Length: 446
Image 1 (cartoon, rainbow, N blue to C red):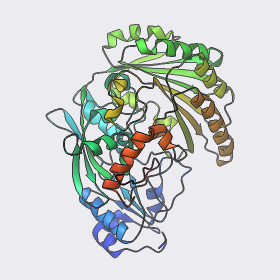
Image 2 (cartoon, helix red, strand yellow):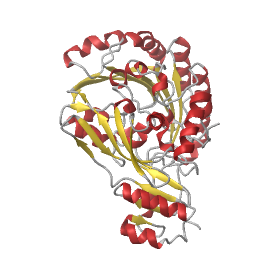
Image 3 (cartoon, one colour):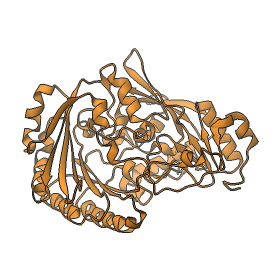
Image 4 (spheres, rainbow, N blue to C red):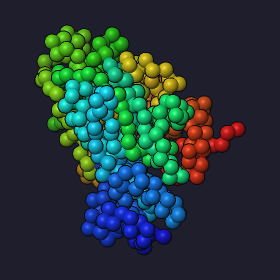
């Protein structure tokens, strides 16, 4: 059965105009994802309004022998939100974030970070989550979730209380540390392998206005500044998020250092002093506004290729490798990002969640981006070569939300964690229905 011949009466009878099939005027837009290099044609896109819709769609897809993909925000780099000649479970109708009187927030499987940020900000609260507001909350959380507030508040999944999950068998269950600790462990890091998350409940944290700044440094001074950031990172206040980005906003590459201070605004100047940054822009803003600052750099439909790495330190060798990569920028819009981790991320024991690499001090993202497909070969070659050098100076780990299907997942996770995840997979999804980019295959108990 192909994407052009599928006509499932049960599907159309239940979903009506929420079933988008080839030939529908909405089909091209419905199958498009964030990464414009992905050109996958599913058999159907089903806009699911609740867990019951998801369960029915799974039953129909499995009865027809069709593969399944789950779309929350559609932001995954490898395009795992769509599947060729299969059924896409589009959770976009579940786009909500509701604050409860107890300070928790319930978030639908189709919500974006901007939805979450605005809902929590209205009551002076926050959940630590990402740096681009049009990212999906679901994918970010199930892959761990790093962002500006990570050194102070940890990963997004560290604030997770429970998940409503539809399993491959079509059962709906609420999973938390008490009901199924092994599955809850697995959901926080490799969660897309085990079912469809239709609702998340997070604890929130107090958050007022933040101070955000940016300084621009010429490339001939970039290694010096990066090394200084690395030298003082462990002693910086946890409320200081730092992102250094080698980029080419004009004719020549520069180092842009962005920072967000999330404690008392009066203390911001003292907090950033150890970084030794030149004068730049500084503004006091609501946190949701900061979260949208770089949205324009990562628009939907851009042609992206990412290679992640993790660093235990940002010393002279790492700094020089990063700068050398910037001197070889190909045509297009390549970037090298270095995000401060540590602090609260490392406070949580490594074995507490499936998220790998909690001890890393920095996450690095090698980004190839070009609007012109003719530039992609050179961009990808640069990304692979640059990543190989930087990763060789790192921990061997990677932030999985930035990784595509090329990653050696077993090596990044380590054999004991990988085997444990495979056993959880076998219990929840023995037929291997869910195959995200970071795919765990089932393995029965030995």
